[in-house]
Amino acid sequence: MAAKKADPNNKTIAENRRARFDYAVEDTFEAGIVLVGTEVKALREGRANIAESYVAIEGENAMLINANIPIYPPASQFNHPPTQPRRLLLKRREINKLMAQTQRKGRTIVPLKMYFNDKGIAKLLIGIATGKDNRDKRDTQKTRDWQRDKARIMRERG
Image 1 (cartoon, rainbow, N blue to C red):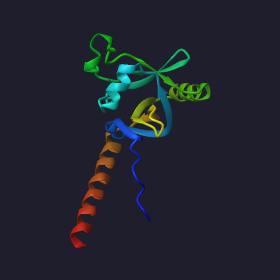
Image 2 (cartoon, one colour):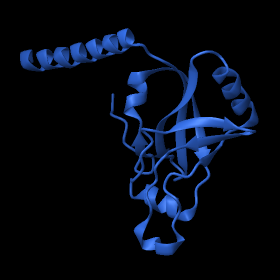
Image 3 (cartoon, one colour):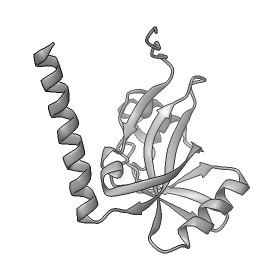
């Protein structure tokens, strides 16, 4: 079985690795992001942070709040504010589903990964998630440690 070649256009910009540890992700959606030119240029340089961000439904729109896309230095005075709210492009049916899910107890919408798709368009993978308690986080850590140790043992024994 041949390994899948990495598409140079399908490039991960930022990943919220902490989200999978802190939350149990139930369902995911792919959303487009409304960006200005300097934001796209900063993303093409691979500079963004979505670790502290979240998604909120405001009126009829889904908004990405607190995502940090740093300024693009060559643009000087025509730059964007780094942490401004950004509108997400979702279908009405998807927004309604997100609204219904978040009204249930303990559910939230977390951004998981920001990337460029194969057409070179910036996309955001968001997920409906419930928070994990400390016991679940310990189980996740224990499983991860065991998988790492098992792989090391298998490598040593050949």
